[in-house]
Each structure stands twice: as C-alpha cells, then as structure tokens.
Image 1 (cartoon, helix red, strand yellow):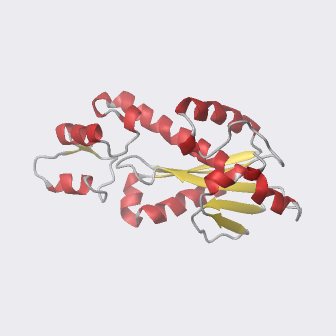
Image 2: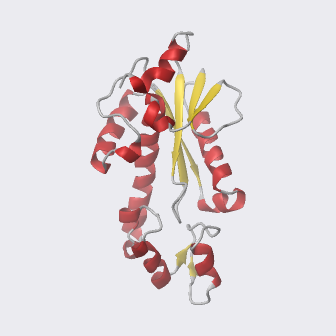
Image 3: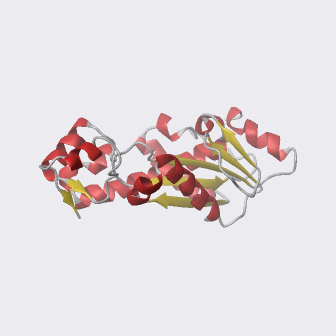
Amino acid sequence: MDDLLKYERGLYKNGITLIAGVDEVGRGPLCGPVVACACILPVNYHLDGLNDSKKISEKKREDLYNILIKEAISYGIGVVSPKRIDEINILEATKEAMQMAINNLENPPQHVLIDAVKLNLDIPSTSIIKGDATSASIAAASIIAKVTRDKMMIELGEKYPEYGYEKHKGYGTKAHIEAVKKYGVKDFYRFTFAPISDLIKEESTVVIK
C-alpha cells in the first residue's frame, strides 16, 4: 500500500492534501456510456485490497466500493452517452467524462492525478501511465467508476435479458455479438464501433429504440 501512496506523499510534502485521483471505465464496450470518477481520499489513506479495479474480483470491487464512497472526502462521477461518444470519438468522450467527474467533486482539488490521459485543467495535474496500479487515489477512482458502470449494465440486463448485459457489461464477447445479430442493435449502442457499424450496414440488422 505504501507504493500506492508515492505520488500522494510527494504532494503532501508541499502542503497539498486535497488530491483527486481520476480514472475511467468503458472505453472498449460496444454499448453503454463511458464513466469516469474523481476521488479525493483522506491523507495517508489505507484500505486493505485497494488496487487497480481490473486486478480484483467483482465481489471485492463491490466491497471496496461500499467502503470508499463512505470514507472518501469527496467523489464525483462523469457519464458520457454512446451518442456523444459517436459524435466526438471515445478519447474525447473519455476526457469529457473525466472533466465532468472533477467538476462534480464537492471539494475542489488542489492537484489532480490522472490515469494516462492528459487534460487541460485550471488546476495542477499529473498524468500517470498505469496510474490505477500505482496511485491510491486513482485506484479508488477506478473502483468507483467500474462498479458504477457495472450497475448500469446490470440494470440493462434486467430490462433486456436476451442480451446478457449483466454478464459481458457491453464488451464484444461472442455471445453478445450473436445476441445483437439475433435481436437487433439498440439505440444505446456505439454506432461507430465495429462490428456494430458493420452490422448496421447489413439490411438484416435492425436498430431498435
């Protein structure tokens, strides 16, 4: 856990304590939004098991999520729709979601640690490659963003059980693509993403609102 605080500790030494970690989830799926989280943790925060959300089980993520949303000083969520993703591309949509998440923080941060992406902010920021595995603040944001988006996809799975969203979370699994071919493309898909873009061109595939 000490290694996860190395970036934060460097900022603490300069009197910076309100540090927002920012991460996103959902750049790769064929449907659903991209979701970002900005999270400010207490100084020298320790939570057993805190790590990159991709490296821990779904059950563990949910347990950590429930703790983090209670113990974080502040967290903000940014959600960008599939339609918007198609309009501006996934990278720009990711940046937009991250900016929204930062704007939705109750406490304005003094510094922002961002996973990989560079943002044009009015506050000092640091972009960190694999930040979700090397910064506690970014790891916390990755978990909150992941669980938030997963909940959205589970709700879609309840509404449209034939697509199995609760299982694949919108990613392009074989079962997911077969379901799309059989039941059609819903309006919450990303029409610019292959193979959805290819399926839409086929007369046999219907776009359903």
